[in-house]
Image (cartoon, rainbow, N blue to C red; front, side, top):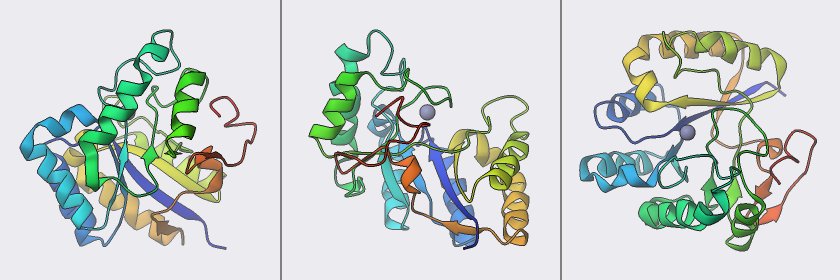
Length: 217
Ligand SMILES: [Zn+2]
């Protein structure tokens, strides 16, 4: 089985960035998932970018309403329903039917991501929680060093789920293009779906509690 790579883009949509990324993905015939922040969809021009992404075959997931403090933090229990539910309402019919939700938390796995109440809410409302195997830090200046971590992840795992961000990747599409070329040269297949190990909750059911994800499921 060839190694696989799933591209995901978080925290958008961003007018001035997401459209360039969509152009790139269309040219390369790559399909990804955009984990969007509900509040950002209040801007009609930004919302239209999510509509475009959906129309072009990308999957749209929920990445909270405000991208505030992680939902496993102390104030998580009072905010989880609004952060998850309001964002899902904002995404509306653009949401993937599997109801993808990705918690925010600085790229690190752990109990800070979701409080027990949020986990119950996600299970009760049939969400699919999507984690990742590599968040290589495209948000850290100078923003282009993420490829090192991404290649390390490809080396390490047979199926990599990469977290990148529209806003930081759009200004360096040349770097993304070289990365994609090298990925292809390595014989890695681009896929849109997620490995079971990145789905601690799937359609509301606790899927597969490995050591790595037990912290949040
Ligand atoms: Zn995020």
